[in-house]
Image (cartoon, rainbow, N blue to C red; front, side, top):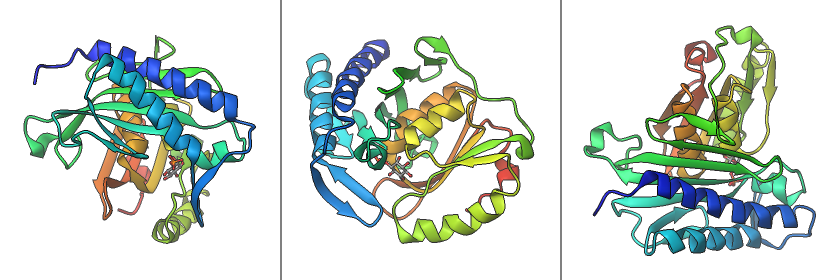
Length: 268
Ligand code: IPD
């Protein structure tokens, strides 16, 4: 397959993210139709609508492209290029009218060698776009380029001191991850300035990329939550450690400014 023009791909992802973001803004305070709910998670009809909108928008620039999304797959997700989409990251916040949620769109390309790939299924992320429609903040990155927020380059913090750091923790959805995270939370809270639990993984990654947080940790997260934000973080000079765990496209991860991972002592 011919190499894709990554700038064109980023432009298409930005356009699609803005379209889904407008739909999210218009519906923040509305009563949402819940498609399914578990103890710690909700899936909305709007998740599906946003993914469809993003797909339609991307397909106008890249017809027949493959999509691996939180709300389903379209085309061949083992194709040379695939879009990895979380149409609404932070769905629980969004459901309750909390304006902290975003659209996450990554373009991934099959790596030359599976052993050097960003992700163990053999893919590298080459474009990352994360859009917070409530603050109108758009983060973008193209592999090996700078990370940008609304067009301006961003960098991770230079903080080396854990006791002065702000660290975000995600509490995922499963019992296993809650059981693993709570004891860690309990000891970390005494060693940092503040812990923040904001509820949108892609935004937590971009907050580390922008120096707002010094680190962000999750014991169980899916590829669509982290593919775009992970690239943006790396392009901002940060470190994105992750490890495959049981479950489809599931990972344990520590995102940091690159200076704090060891002192965070996250049990792996
Ligand atoms: C969730 C959010 C949350 C994180 C969960 C994710 P979703 O994504 O990012 O912050 O803790 O692990 O699954 O379901 O809102 O797209």
